[in-house]
Image (cartoon, rainbow, N blue to C red; front, side):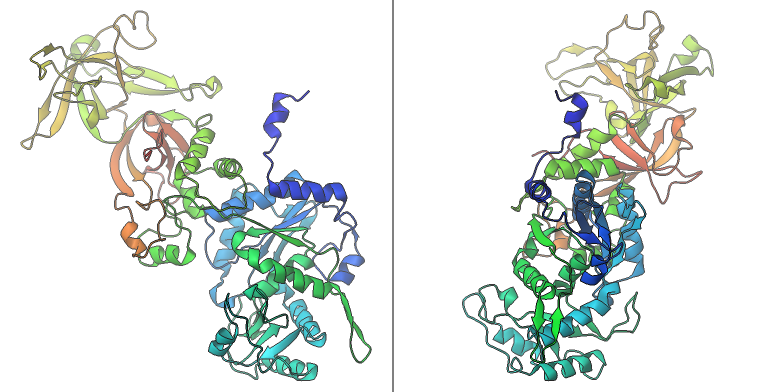
Length: 614
């Protein structure tokens, strides 16, 4: 019989889980050897039986900060490895030296760890970078030339583009395609030795220029690019193309299931073609047997739909534009979809993992509503977030008979649970006096129907006399509204009310007077002033950046409002990154950057409910 705990641990199935379970059942990779580190076929043959049942990888390019789409991929790959007794490698696909930087390498490692995953497995440190494999990639390229599967092409970029054909027209063979092996090897080594200028030649795989899959029409696998690399320095002036490097990286690391997004589906035939060529042995005309460079069975690629989240844009180029043009404060701006932005906004690793689990994995593109992400956050914060009272748009409430009832200058102690369902967390304490801060919207001189907060005695539109309202100050006393003071412009500057004696919460007879309204407040005497940043969605349209117009026109001009608020005294000295539920307002977090001793800064994470419901 399945226990409730077992049911909670059961992960929803998807096509990737089914593939892995089938491979495990059939022993597809059971005979694999692992040399203790990435390497070629001989390296792994000298190793032991692989202790990992499956090997997966998360392979970001270190050319920017990771976003929520990458977070889904991290949770997917590391989660599958965890669930099936395997390991997941963190590999930096650093084959494009002009766009990569160690700043991004560090930020990616930090993001993976913050999300709750680790590339250390037992005694192994499965942190790798593609550039460590450049020597093997070059060796593999020479093998492809020797075996007749690659050639150096010196057409111009325009000529190559024209001769490639299109979906309705086959490509045309390059005039350099028939070069001899010796000519190709010599020319490729000249490329390597910096004897040719950038763009003068490329190494292409020799496959089929008439293939219906344009990606198989002799794709380029090496290009000349004089650029300093953050890891290899100036050792190389030729660099492998991503579509060539990626399958090789997988093979050297003995990856079993190479999971990527749907845009790589058309590249899968080349992925398999390349690994098939590198795994097989070939007898050359001079009698030499070459090949067998990678272990078998080699990895297989599987594609899933990338994350499309409404009101969110994940284009690195456009996100970089927002940063460089100072439309946002940086990559960690809490409105950004980057992992550092989500973290500063107040999202938790658990909420992002729950979000990834809820949206699942499919092979068809679809849009996930932003409320799904916010819902996962609320569901993880509600059971654990301490409660607190805060007034975000304050106006002073004066209890006109306080001195008469309680004594001049008196302060009354009040308390509330830190969390209503976690009594072990104890209570928080604050004081009420003659003056308290309340929300400006809690007072109406002529209230609309259904308004149960503060209003004075008045005559409604029907001529009916309406008595002044009575409300409870939460965790405190019942009060009766008297009226308000306004400035010359008609703005309320102070609200007045009478304290009704013997109505303090938790005391005998406190419920003798029934009220419909309860309002939150903070005592003027012990209030803590705070800067509160009210963040909202960065874009006003569901699918930003997808139309013909400038995506900057779709920015939400109200995505950030900063207010001076008052919070209860329990929040005076909380550390940065601490999350709370401000009663009635939603979830807030002390800012990771600007919050410090003497300066209380809160970010709104999300409201109590979705405010963008259609």
